[in-house]
Amino acid sequence: MSTVPFTEPEERVALREAVSKLAGSYGHSYVAEKTRNGEKLTELWQDMGKHGFLGVNIPEEYGGGGGGMADLSAVLEELAAAGAPLLMMVVSPAICGTIISRCGTEEQKQHWLPKIADGSIIMAFAITEPEAGSNSHRITTTATKDGDEWVIKGQKTYISGVDEADAILVVSRTADAKTGKLKPALFVMPTDAKGLERQVIPMDFHAPEKQFQLFIDNVRLPADALVGDEDGGIWQLFAGLNPERIMGAALSLGMARFALDKAVEYAKTRQVWKDVIGTHQAIAHPLAKSKIELEQGRLLMQKAAALYDAGDDAGAGEYANMAKYAGGEVACNTLDVAVHTHGGNGLAQEYGLGNMLLAARLGRIAPVSREMILNFIAMHSLGLPKSY
Image (cartoon, rainbow, N blue to C red; front, side, top):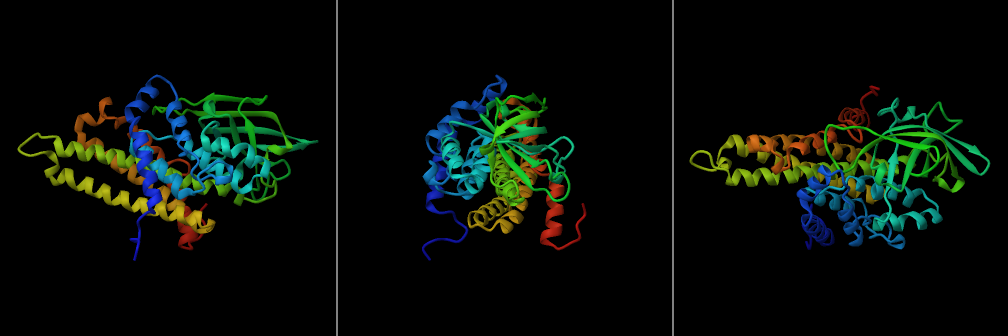
């Protein structure tokens, strides 16, 4: 055989190496300084766009790399492993870029995709609502036709990066579909639209990307702001949500790799008694366990991405959920082990693990909680009765 099973193609290996080199030139210290100063990761984002890394999943005819989620998730994993994750990659090229690629008109693709691919614009994504939570069927943001325009009204919460975005892909429902099965209507809304207000949500963990609550008060949009069919069904939404879960896994797994590398290096060099602390099984075994869990999570993510890129939306949904679950678990577990390996230094700013410990915890909550993933697997994978 010319290839070894369970290894990535040479092109993706080369992609990982190139991203790792670029991200390493910035590193965690760059992100930490920007975060402390309340600044954005603009230089890194633009550099990634210039080298074509932001749009590797966008079709070539629209300025992208012509790859898929397997490639884009590899890019984000390498960024996070270098200590320089870009959260808006989960949103702009993965969710919004994919939905527009699969559901948008030719005019929408020509207008938005090249700019998403080169990073010259950032698109946010708004689905979560204060009263809906994980139950997207309770979305109350409505879109009403008024002549040649749509009028959007509602609220959204925990929307990432609105202050650095040029537009938002807003999930709503048409005004005559407030009951029954959700048929999402997706609209591209400029962040400077009249009637759109935002309010930052203070968070206890620190990141360059802020979280916002949105107030959408009768925002008027042209007819061509609608992406896809207003009655196209929920598949249009999951065209972006499955990539979101895959990218969430990539972000978590990259953070876990960063933490594990730090902990292993510390265990190899930190000497308290006769030998370095890595010789002690109480230190070595938790690190080895983290390595195993990390590789398990990566295999799930890679399978989910392969299924998605092959056009198997149902299979991708199952494995994207499992990958996201595994990624959140391994990130939390590995960050805890890494902090413990460092002792008191684990919470020192110099080592860059304390704030990441909080960030890793988000992987168990967002974009969907681990409990909802377990509900999904119990019902769809195991055939158990629906519990919610």
